[in-house]
Image 1 (spheres, rainbow, N blue to C red):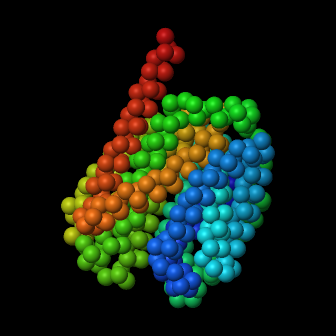
Image 2: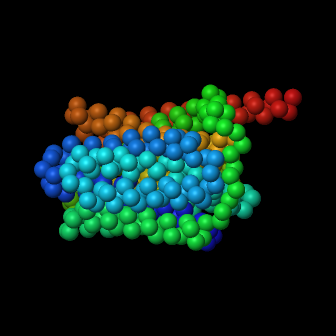
Image 3: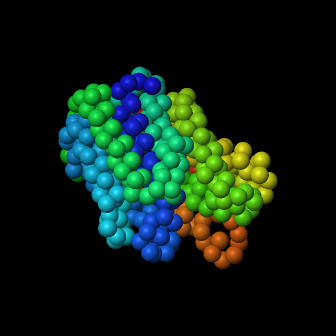
Length: 388
């Protein structure tokens, strides 16, 4: 790992912790504020909404500044809003804090992806981006379980204080270790927005939003899947999530290498098809505890492996609008989060059981793969026209 990429990893660690720890803290927050679990669940939606709003908006208004200054400003926002979460007096204030906390998420990963690719050696851009996303995977492996434990045994407010501390550490290391790269913006916001009039832009965003939704069909309902179908004890669920987190760490590394080995769009296609196969397998083997654990690791790996390929694909496609494109990809990821949780829950609601979301996930992963095929064909046609 290059020293100058570590600040991006720390930022990813903080963002990953605040995004995913909320799932484990919901019962504690609901009890503290005397609201139901579904009402407390709106705090998850608030964060996702913040990401979708903030990703393109903050990049659009800040991309004329040097990347280091942008990242510092985003991490100041992240730290302040998570600190506010720790002191929220009621659920409405916490809802606002979560919405605001989500604003810098996509912009940080968008700008950070471009910075990582610019700092990378030639041919290793996707691997450099995977170093930044390593923070996200380490969060799922270590700090999310730790934050959940703190919330259960002490107070969820201490968990958000811990997240704010991680934000402060990221700020310090951005200032000390991140190089002062020059502004990369080539045109104004109007010309950058023109990229989103192209078919390629929407094929990438649809591949991301629909394809990765398959993952969230699985992980959103992994707890009842393991307890009701796999017959694991409820106390085993945190350990099972650590297995998924370990898979994410390994998958993130392998995804970066795959995207540098083959074309990024081909890497996305391979991973989405693999995700569909994994979800089908889970549907049939979830009653077997050993196979369930194995598939949890494999599916966790596949879920994070696609992060670097899809980011480098967008960066290489969005010439002149790289930061805006990369940020929009993060918004698409969170759209996939919301769609997967929503659509995956529909068959459960009508009584089809906790394995049914996997079939919805298969359909979403295959649909995402079809968008990737369409993009692959379009790129091939463009190359033929350039040769002619």
